[in-house]
Image 1 (cartoon, rainbow over the protein chains, first blue to last red):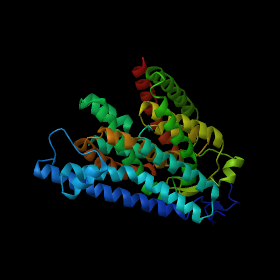
Image 2 (cartoon, rainbow over the protein chains, first blue to last red; image 1 turned 60 degrees about the vertical axis):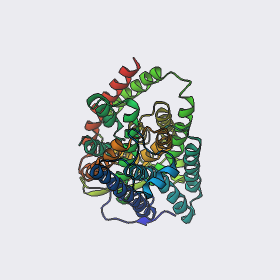
Image 3 (cartoon, one colour; image 1 turned 45 degrees about the vertical axis):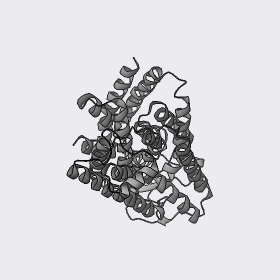
Length: 136
Length: 266
């Protein structure tokens, strides 16, 4: 079912058409990563600029927010370290986000093998976050 | 500046950049190892996501191969995290160091291979439709490639995941080697696909480091921004290299890492 693309620029096996294994999904995954990276970079830069400009982290020296709730509420109050942590949090979630997009994409292509593989990866990732035990 | 360089090299070789970030932060800037590893995890994710934007769009990363092999890396990472307290870290460093040194030899043996010639994909690779093609800028033509030995690749990826779970260090090198040595993919496809994958492996552990407070905002923010910039540059440059040239860059990196690991264990 893979998309076929014939090309004049043949290789060693020039009698066969060239096959790209994921022509439809590639641009979508690429876009998903670009969105994740751009948003987190903008937030990171904002937080860092604010930190340098105000000279204050918004928290007691040597401390910064860790729990998701504290990060979010701190970011809304425009505390520099909370904004940075929020940006880092989004950056960490970007690969998870693209795995989720992968599940949907392969499902739309009716590719049950890859849906199974990607779902497994997603479950393991979510579990590792919940259990807080996985290394990487 | 260091993080820009780490991003460039990481994006070009399919590594996380931890190999560069950790020694720079600990040896030159004298930061504690825990903070350095926290920053390097952020750098791995930034390199991976930043570089994969271009590699996936241009078809250099094979996302089907990547997502298939992530089964093994994530499983290995979780198992590694659980075994971390049981196995001796020093012994592991020596074992993995020796494995890397051995792979450097394997890579050297193939030093004249620009595109591996695999006539037919393995039946499992055919079933999963892993074969693909990419446009090689240097050779100026599309390169169709087949996929050998997916089970060997899975096994090596499991080791890569296990290593990162056990030792908390990036496993980009092992990922590249699994695809290069076992699955016989073109080296550019191996590095680009490794790049695509390392973000997921690192994300599996990032949550832990984040919650433990090992990711210092003042360090992680500039590192992440620098690495993202570097990754953008690295992807532009990598496609202009020959696979052979890339191979020559790899060998010293492999040997240096192998030496570093054996020393840490000894």
